[in-house]
Image (tube, rainbow, N blue to C red):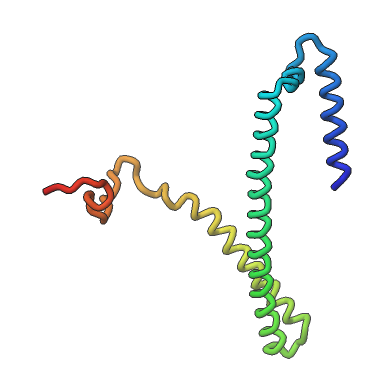
Length: 143
């Protein structure tokens, strides 16, 4: 964790040194000497950290919850297979393996089918009318 941070700081220092030595640099780091530019840059940096940090934590938590749910389901399948099969633990793991293959296949099929499910409608065909009356959401009442 410290090595990538140190490498990033070193590369940033090298870029700053390179940009300060050029007459027309690609990014003029001298602009950061102005207080409004520096404060705006800092605000944008911390906004990005907050936004992308929250996204990282949210996806990580979701993956952990989904993984623990899948592990719990397969543990129940394994437990049931151990009690049902006289072959013992190897046969039970075989059953749990094929269940996990079936779940994975189902997930792949759903991920391929669901995004294209809305495109089955003919573009020339008019959209179906909404069951909600027009007065309910538009704020207008026809009398």
